[in-house]
Amino acid sequence: GENVEQHPSTLSVQEGDSAVIKCTYSDSASNYFPWYKQELGKGPQLIIDIRSNVGEKKDQRIAVTLNKTAKHFSLHITETQPEDSAVYFCAASKGSNYQLIWGAGTKLIIKP
Amino acid sequence: GAVVSQHPSWVICKSGTSVKIECRSLDFQATTMFWYRQFPKQSLMLMATSNEGSKATYEQGVEKDKFLINHASLTLSTLTVTSAHPEDSSFYICSAPNLGGGNEQFFGPGTRLTVL
Image 1 (cartoon, each protein chain N blue to C red):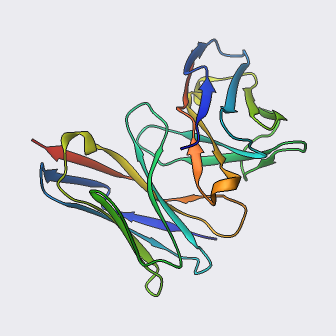
Image 2 (cartoon, rainbow over the protein chains, first blue to last red; image 1 turned 120 degrees about the vertical axis):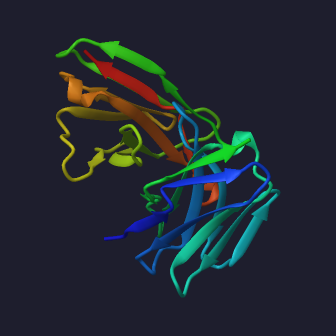
C-alpha cells in the first residue's frame, strides 16, 4: 500500500534561518499533499497543501514544492520564528476517499 | 477555514468503564469523518472511517466491538471506548473533509483519554 516517508525526524534551526522538511511517497496515483502543524496537546492544523497539477505553492513564509517524477514533496519555512516550533506532518491522498497516509512527523525546534 | 470540535477535551476514567467522545463539524456538513489515535511522539493512526447513515469502516487490527462509532447526523460522530483499559489511554482525534472545498481535512482539537 501507500507509504509516506518523512525526514528529518528532528530539525533544529536558528531563529531567522530557513527550515526544510522532505517527504517521499510510493503511490504514483496520489494527487493531494497537505502539510499539518501540530502543537503539543492539540489537533493537527492544516498549514498548506498542494495538488498534483501544481509544482509549487507559497503562502507568506511557507512554501511547498512537489516533484511528481521523483515522488517527493517538501515544506519550506523561511525567516523562522519561535512560534514555528511544533511537530510537522506531511500526508498524501488520492481519489475521493479522503483518506490520508501520514509521514512520521518532524519535530522543528527554533533556537533563539 | 472549517471548524471541527471535540468533546470532552480530556477525560479520566476507571478501568472497565465506557467513555464517549463527540466530534462535531460546526459550519459544514460531514457525511464522512475519520477517527485517529495518537500515542506520544508518534504519527496519527487511522482507526476507522465514520459514515453518516451506514456502518463505520474499521482499519485492520481495530476492534469494532471495543471502539463503537455512530455517525448520528451530518454534523456529529461519536466514538465510544467500551470497557476501557489502561492500554487504551491515548490522544483521540477526529477529522472531517470539507466536501465542498476539495480534499482538505479539518481536525478537531483532540481528546486526551487516561484510563486508571
